[in-house]
Image (tube, rainbow, N blue to C red; front, side):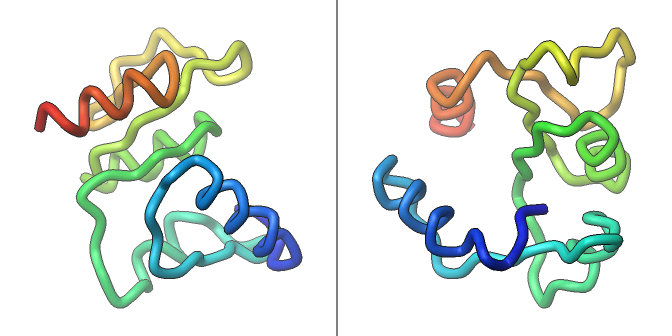
Length: 98
């Protein structure tokens, strides 16, 4: 959900951190992230989302969703397909183990 003018900064971050990517998709202001995701020409094996309401919607749609643990997105809800992770290291371990 980053603005389109953040493309260069986003690509730099991914390259710097060794995260491979083919393309980036941006969600425009006022668009719902789940609607954008559902209209892409491909599916997802998993999704990483740090905003609770977006993560909840994505997980409830059936996509395995990982949410980095931050004070603003903690919840006691038991949401199917949503897993909180402590950071990139834990996420990498989980993905490599699956």
